[in-house]
Length: 358
Image (cartoon, rainbow, N blue to C red; front, side, top):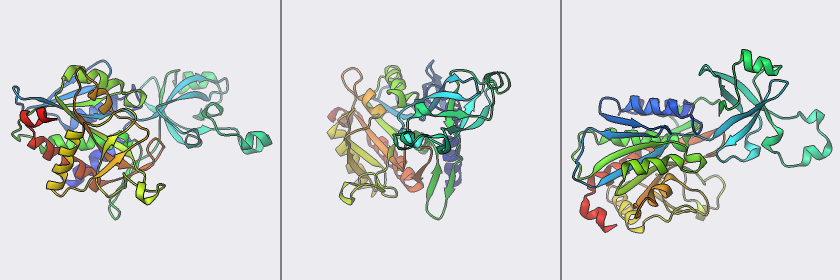
């Protein structure tokens, strides 16, 4: 893929609407990007498993994974004044929700723009001005003035999915994308590029690539897709939270422009140390910059895959994203390329003996 093609793909994936459970647009982009080079299987959760045309059926199965969903909201109720009460989908800090511009899906499949609104300060009591902000005090205003206008004219129902309304752009001078949903659309883009780089390459593994749904609400899609694929090994792509704007220098483990992050530990998974060491050695061999991390929180689809049956060795290749789980984020094009290059070299090097050694 050319740089222009990569940039266009990342922009399209970032701009796509895909809150957990409603990932249709992302699945369509995934299929379009890889059309004519393999086959797809989409299940009832919207997990989309891609099987490349190049296969080695007698070899061990390696699963690639990236999740299609993004954090967002869902319509809980419609008020008499026409505004929407909502619930967060995925993990949010309430203070980051207020005043966001959003897109609400109508029953026709179109989107209506609106804003997350709260009581203006002019009408707040002294105690209201000082208490912590909560999403329960907010509504989404789409410009309607009544329940019937929202339902009949705007055609919005309870259960309508909502995403932040942000357009992605790329800044050549700083090598940065600015947009939404890089957790995990940048990982999806890296998985697509990896598969394209391997097209027609002879491999000693049987490759399957899962675009997994509903990661942000409990790794749900990966728990299903791993049962379909039954892998012997897994590489998980992720858009991981960057820590370079608020951590002490010695604690920075996922900075922009420093390469992808390979995570040793989080609260959901202890990474197989032998596979992790192997991946780090491959990065060193090919002069690919990487970062290592140990996290006291977080979790990825690697945990769901790692816990399948007798255990699947899995690593996470995380591309740093500033301000994940907010409306806006930054991500580095170079980090995206390095993440994909690392996966390509790992996959080209694998065979049954090496996988058995993990």
